[in-house]
Amino acid sequence: MSAVTVFGLCAAAAVGLGLYGLITNPQPLRKIIAFNLLGSGVFLLFGVVGRRGAAASIGNDPVPQALVITGVVVAFSATALAIALVLRLFQKAGSTTLSDDAPPGADPNLPGG
Amino acid sequence: MSLACDIITIAAVSAGAFFFLAGTVGLLRFPDTLTRLHALTKADNLGLGLVVLGLLPQAGSLRDGLKLVSIWLLGLLAGATVSQLIARTARQGEAAK
Amino acid sequence: MSIATIFEIVLAAVVLGLGIWTTAVRETYSATVGFVAYGLLVALIWVRLDAVDVALTEAAIGGGLGGVLLLGAAARLRNAELMVTETPGKVTRVSAAALSVLIATALAGAVLLLPDSVSTLAPTVVAHAWATGLTNPVTNVLMAFRAMDTMLEKVVLLLAIVGVWSLAPDSAWGGHPGPRHQADPNGVLAFLARLLPPIGIVVGIYIFWTGANHPGGAFQGGAILASMWLLAIMAGLTDTPPVRSRRLRFILVAGPGLFLIVGLGGLCFGAAFLAYPPALAKPLILGIEIAMILTIATTLGLLLAGAPERSAKR
Image (cartoon, rainbow over all chains, first blue to last red; front, side, top):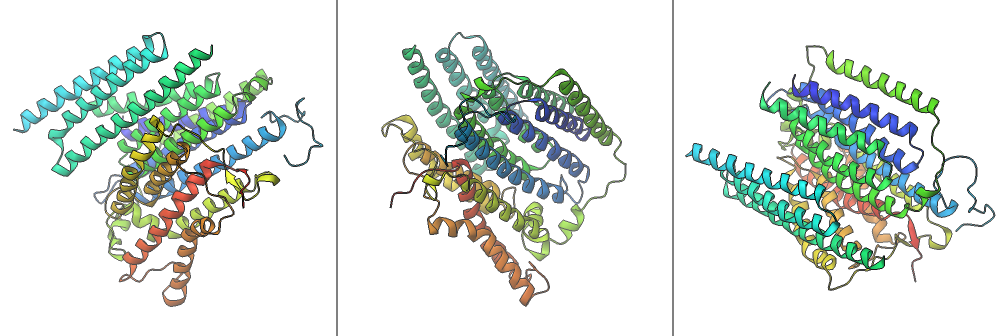
């Protein structure tokens, strides 16, 4: 039972949890949190594969590490854009529901705002 | 000499871990926000300080030791500030009720 | 089973428990707090996996800045929660659970059945470290061997900030992002915002500088600089800059722009796009990284500040 196995199973479980939360949570903010959970599980899988590639006196293969660093930054910027969208949706529509029926507070005839 | 260093490390880090445990028990068991903050800050500052004290004999050089102490000082600063802010908000929330 | 393995099993169990709690808890605010704690513990997992650069990035950007982003959004959306009445039906939940279990099992199987022979690029990276003169292999990969990925990542950051700014209402177009934060100028927050940023700036620049030979780098340092800037903004000591300011836009473009110019220089004067001549590699990489850390700090700070909400007064 090495670190690779333990954290690999943890990463697989995180991916499953994130996917479940992404599909079943009705609120967009919870979906964004679940999406980040899913993303961190995928990054951990990269890290586990990189740990197996430890050689030449480095503990972890540097190429997957660089890919994960890039991935963390890109996931953060995607989260920031998604949250800006959710906040704008809340500003314009008065609620953050993703369903098609307009909530009672919204007036589609109001310009901009 | 290194045996003495290891004993100090184990003793201090265990004491620090005990304080962290005490702080967590306080967080879970105390009735309201202010008492929980009291438990957290006392325990975490002392706990972190003991852990850092325990790691100092294992530090390779004076510079590493100074970095460890600065981590503790920054943790103190952040903890003190944030608990003051939380406590003020909790007081205002209670006064509003 | 060694102590290290027991520690890893406990760590993985706590992380999974936090993940389950974050997914299942009712209130969004609690889920956000759970996610921040999850991010910090995952950083510990990265340290156990011997990937300290990734641990720094995960703690700074994933847990730290991401947590601030989610906490701010959860606070603003607190009223929206009460209006959501739809919950997914049983069929959706059961099929989602089945799909998740299927995928998780497939991934777990893949992890357990990994082939015994390992193909790794670590020896190649270490063997080619002479080309840049830096000894941190992750920095070598990021800035030299896969510099194209890093350059495109900067462009992605730029696109994200353009996307966020485009969400401004007409009245606030080109204005200041976010609300104007007020805090008691003699209070604790203002005190912290005066005391911490000088220390934080030194720490951020140190982590950036030491990334050449030790774990660290421009992304981690840039995240620390961005958080110091945000602390000053949240304490009301400074306001967010208007997004139509030319200087701000120049700083945002400086990072990818310099990268692109060096790349084209490599194309014209060297062997290929983004090829560094070995004699000039270290100064070139340093120059690119300085522009990068400025851009990263500014972009991350602005992404957290959000879409413009107040018009810029002329």
